[in-house]
Image 1 (cartoon, rainbow over the protein chains, first blue to last red):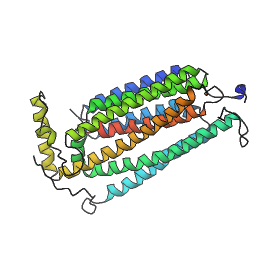
Image 2 (image 1 turned 180 degrees about the vertical axis):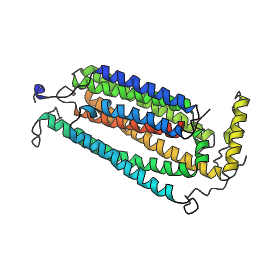
Image 3 (image 1 turned 120 degrees about the vertical axis):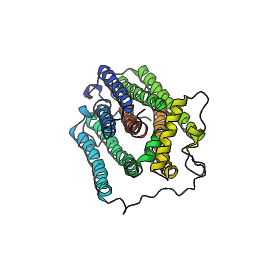
Image 4 (image 1 turned 30 degrees about the horizontal axis):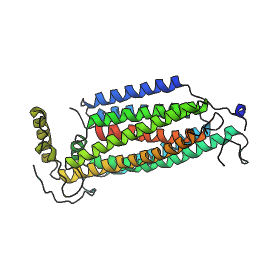
Length: 114
Length: 243
């Protein structure tokens, strides 16, 4: 065992604290945005901010920025496979006419009514 | 015998050994992304089909508790990152301190989640025969503002008019809420177990600048669970709330 041989990239606490405050600001913004009705932009704003927050966590907290190329390839592959699942499934559901597809919903009798 | 960071025969350097361990964890996290991805996919398709019920369902959640939990979880990610830094720089006592803080914040998250689940029972929002999406507005707490209640009643009446099967479809939302937050909470419990194991090693001062791979790897898992919540929070709590 030789400690000097070890070449970790050590991320400084300053960067961690800066990322923490960026994540807090993102949380504040997304909660504030939730109280305004932006129509179709609600999802875009909410998921946009979430993706920015997730990117910061992956790059800095999870050290992806300082990781070797093969680790980065694995991360990109994860996003790519997730995108295949989401996009291809949605192209199916979005392009069928409404009457042909009926999703199952639980057939539980309603005991209470307004 | 415990590991102290010696080089195993199949690796050339310690750096390669450590990078391989991290790569293995990342590959596990890829499978986790797809595991949770299936849930997000189900949520997206159902939300698209039953948007009225999902809108009503989203408004039954407590945004204050959800926001508090988001802040708690991001704080725990910071303390986890600081535990990794403490191990890498040889600050052995700080490792223990930061691991305890991370574990404590994780428990606070689960506690708040428990309070939220209890609310769902109180409001008759558990899927099954007693499920009643209108229960809360018909049984208000004393001291609730009449204007807010009137607005909520009007909203609900509109939703019933748009979707006669509102009660069934809202159950889909609540079922997905429990499945998604429950799976996430299960991952938090596993993370808490891993943190306890790290703590048992940290108090024996096992983590040094030469040997800290376990702290780093559990850190990767903990941050991943944080990322899942970063997406769950807006999808479940925020996108249908505009008041």
